[in-house]
Image (tube, rainbow, N blue to C red; front, side, top):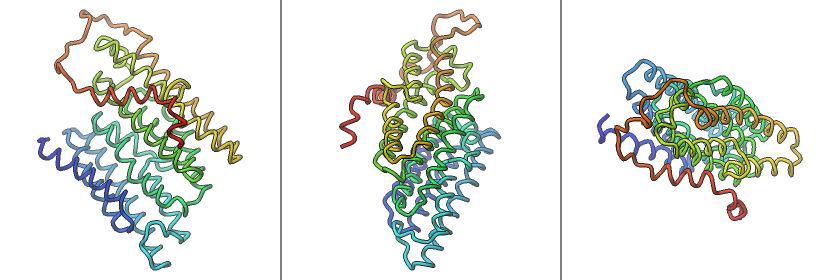
Length: 345
């Protein structure tokens, strides 16, 4: 793909998301989502193989269905209330349609089946865009309509997503599929807390975006597409593999690292609201996802590949990769926990 086309598609992608996030009218929000979807389809199918085409088709069908449901939801609400204002969503059928549409957009359980498949058919860079930037517009709509959405439904979707996301990642060997189930789990945590405290949801979203970006960047640099690839990553850069291990532990939510902060705050808030069963379920589901993060961390830093390597380090074809984004996001993903009180103000 030529640089000019790439710039046009990426700017359209950003424009669509910004239109949705800043709109007050349902039609403008829908147009933003459509622009966003149409911009990423060529990016997914840029590589000429059947798997990429299949992934782009699945993504298009899922997102088009979700956008249509959002449009139907807003039309029903406008028909019954006479307004297209996003914050004024008072019709019951509109709530149900919108909740399911946003769950489908985000990849929440039970409409999560498309996410691992689409990520597996995409390149690493495209997968990074899908699990980070593409989550912003639906999360913005949840934030805008949160006063009208059902608390019970959202907490149930969040609990199901955290459990099934952790369960689904247990037997995966492809790093992109593991990151897809990781995304489902994290979005489950965000959805569970969204109706109770939106500030924590936004904090969780920001930290998730930073940690996922850092880890994907590490996987891109080390060209680790399967768990087996991570066993030889140490030959590329021992420092990089050490950072990958710490990032994986942070994603798992272990205490001295940044990833512990959102889990701690969410569990604390659920206990304050006397939602003890929900907090217990989320805490137990964190163990499931921690298992596959630990498995990746183990293969990355604590095992040596059985096949012999003649050279001490891999050949570096690209001499100077740009690592400033990875350096910044990795630092934030590790050292942010002491700043928790400052972020809650």
